[in-house]
Length: 420
Image (tube, rainbow, N blue to C red; front, side, top):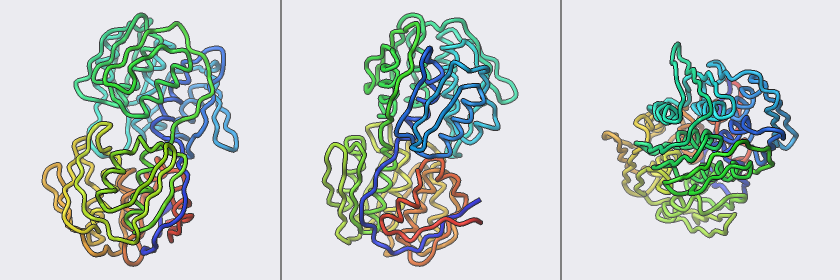
């Protein structure tokens, strides 16, 4: 097990290129099992633990997987031999539930472990199961596993009681091979959902309305293999923007989609950053200034993403003024606050709100990452803290950030990984 050592106080400057989006790649990997006749090739794949785990899962099912030196992945589902997603493979990531819809659509059978992942709040699978039940699936849940069976899925109207990204993706994939038309209302609008729909359409699906809260899918008899490049990771983009802002630095981000982080750019401008952007690049200049406190409230896209809440919390700990962070998505997504307090942050929790009084400086300390985005926020705090910060349990960061310490080193950060 490794830890990160950060000597704070360096102003970040330079260029960084953004990797492919984890939350787009993982459902595409799962969807690959629905292809017939030809292979699926996925490009712009980030080197992440969750990607490795998903590839191991597909190989365990019998899918033939080939990776080249550039992390392009070719998948041949014609060799699949079982439809079982075991606990020991999927216990660290909630996205494992995304194999359920594709397996049922293509093979009519699946045995999937109830998912794990970061302990940031309840992520019930009931919405997935209720929707699939309406499409003709029968379930038996025992000993932590979901056993599901059906003949051909039947298209119907699915109305989610609460917006769910993975729920939308699961039903979107399942309905591509269903008989008739499926209408998904209160569908998630995130760019990763749109990218998945675009990928499925390339495979021969008939999907319209993606990017809105009503998606229509006309079922087809089969899907074909394609070559497809995943979109850039908007959360990695936002994290590096905050890294520059919190250190008073200047950064140019390449291989991104600026429209996908419009709300993050707006908040960083409020904090005092000068930001210019094109469709695929963003330049942020803090001019050496201390950021101003900014209030945020998380919500479904296009509102402020919960996956950037912890990073803005870190920014506000050293900002000028007082801020309020309201978390509306996950009830346990303030676990990083206790660790930031060890570094001198002044934060008070009131239900789903964090009230932050900005300090002139943080002080390096030994801290522990509690989830993926919390680990990113502790890195950001360490970059600006006086002295040395040691971050343990960094296996969380490896689930969602491609070589983060190497990219930060390119920007001048004094950060390195070492064994415990």
